[in-house]
Length: 346
Image: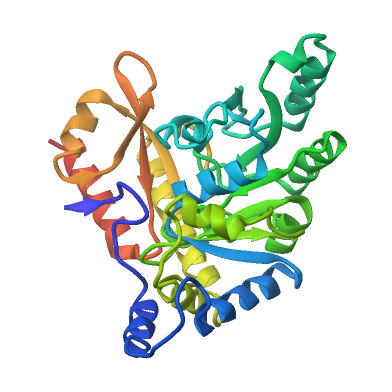
């Protein structure tokens, strides 16, 4: 059965597996003090054009969001995000479990808008009783968003300006960052993210690695962040596992190469859906494609292809997500199109 259920069904890129095998019997220090982790951090700093950045490697995406957010916030503060943001919808209350409220604002195509953030902050500080409330302590965004949409350079700069006006850190969740950076027409780059954000993550789990995320702090990490990582259960004793993977991802442009390939395959898929008359829920330029299916067709198709339920469109139609991974091939996309054609002729 073909699977487009997510972009982490496969294990890891063969070059990563080969490098892990090659280095397997080397004795290296633990907890990220090994040579591969130090090398990976240096390569990420170079790619971000931010030589003074602090870089940490954590086990997974939810642990990274939980750890970074809790380390950035005071106990009286919460995190502002779009109402469709990952921390608000799909992380089982991980942020709230640290004692920090998630403060959602209506998003536009999955994005938090600078003017909405500014309006929230103005209302908060204009309220004479705001000392009795949870303080908006930071802004959280993801790039790409949960809907595969992307921030523009001007949108990032506007959000950054509002955050700096009010003294809030801006955190960008980059679990699928490679797919955003390699989307055609984007004007957002790693150096731009490093200039506009106080913290961001570079996802490995969904972009070719077995597991792991890199947390980057362009201006320096919060106090005792290493201890925060360990306290959150996101620190690996065998830190080399993450170091070797990210060192390979950022060698020879592999991270960007495989991300570009996934986006190209997703565009091939999108064109195929459009040629067959399927409506898009929204126009995503990344590896996640959101299609509206009639419920009966969705049920039949699910017997032959794996995809993800997203939300109901109306009483008889459903929005589903097809996620294209770094390992997708033209044969897989063409196979999906053949299945669509066969189902429509039954």
